[in-house]
Image 1: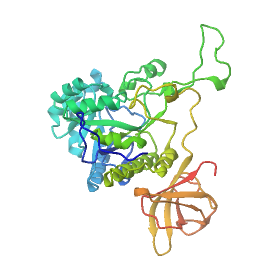
Image 2: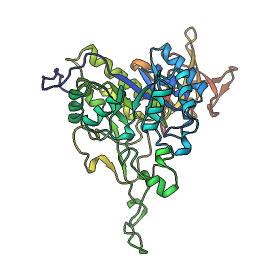
Image 3: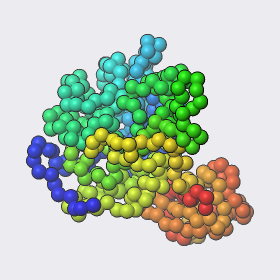
Image 4: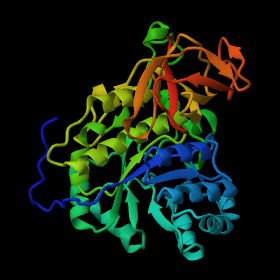
Length: 418
């Protein structure tokens, strides 16, 4: 990538502060790792009023613990309250929002005007950020929501960089933009395929991702038009990835870079958050000399579930931005373990197993800031010191001699098939 120069006038605002890095957290454990790997804020879901009913989601007590942990790093916790509510959903809403405020949640992400109004009335300590479910694409709509008292708008994924620049020029408000992760094949919140096929409402947390199913084509009662299983198609999108274009986004004045993925693994949250943290920090350390490092892309692909695209940032997506055949089988690496402790004297790490591993396998250890090394596993011992031939039990604690020092909350992964 060529050296970046600061943009000329033309109404653009040159950003001097770091944008917020906002990471997903589908559980308390993922929250802690996202913050540890560099997130300035994380967004979570409670057990009511969110759009990820299949995520682990948080109790109020877990929210309190997560908010305390985040504050220790100078980070914030936001909570998605982004359903479009039916009448029966409103019972208990006031109490729920008051509970979020008391738990230390910094902001809610909301779409339904009744949720927004209720939060402003009963929980004034909560900021209200407008959800991408509102599909905001233009500066007049942004101005409307600013006039309603909202300090931040999460723009629709369909917004181009040119449109973002125009919005930022005209309206003094925080803009949050998705920079990485899965994309809805419809406008967010506008798809009813899930409702039709499974009676699960995507606007009430039940999306079954039917756009990613495999389909065939029929005319009436006839045989399928597409012959053979390999010819079935999907309607899903490639995943968004803007790691190669961060200077343009920073210089556009975007206030928050959002990573999608509350349903994704701890390994995904830590890996992707860590890469974007490194890239943002590298830019601000030397804007003129900033370069995209190949190892950042390598790391992204280790956690990527699908091929990647820049989405709508630079124009309308074309045929190459969609997935028509069977989806790839997922990331090329398995999350194998979490480092719990490390003995500097003996060079032995205590690792909690997350998928089976055995002596002779090549693994990678990595941590925040780009620390990474590979090694072949030697002898393994359980906590009692007994030698084992494989770490086969979920959450089993295993003693591993590492070739370089590691730290608590470092992660271990292995290549699939190795």
